[in-house]
Image 1 (cartoon, rainbow, N blue to C red):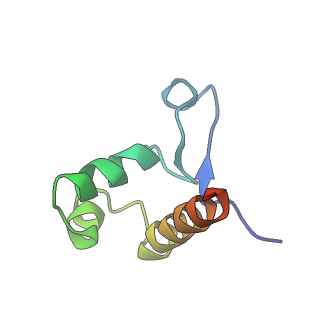
Image 2 (tube, one colour):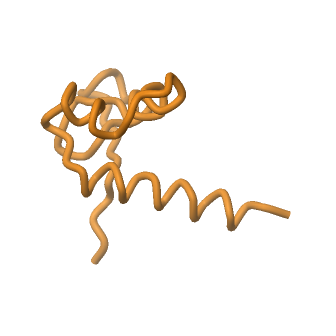
Length: 70
């Protein structure tokens, strides 16, 4: 069974989507990338998130966008 990369719980950051097993909001990765920062910069700032989680998150986002395209 595929484990979720992102989780949500009302007990963690008020239910904001976070990387599973952490308190790091998934949106923070997108903020870093939008600002021109690298994945390595993000991982350095949030060592509780793994590179594998970041890649899985980006692959899932890509897949969802491609599937939703008209």
